[in-house]
Image (cartoon, rainbow, N blue to C red; front, side, top):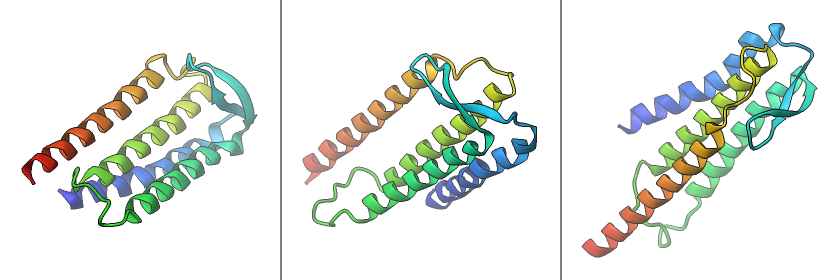
Length: 143
């Protein structure tokens, strides 16, 4: 299972950079660089800023990886041995979606990110927290 999750992380990381590389020449000179809560583009910048989304995603992934690896063993909870990989995949899916959606909005294939985008992220983050909390409580009861 861990090998499959690591393969998914690798594929999503590569695709986060491959998608903009594929579309880069067809992008207009000005692309959306920020979206409001409704998912509408409200700020624009040079097309080279598409790489900023990828860079921010990669930096965030590395920061989360560093934070999760540096949890002292005596403070670590036994929530899930796959939780770090699941968090990485979740972050990569978000940044892949943001990259692809920015491209589609730039090319006028989409009008916005969609109103469901922010709501979905909030729901998924809460579900991860609930699952993590439930696993922690369950492992404490077993001990």
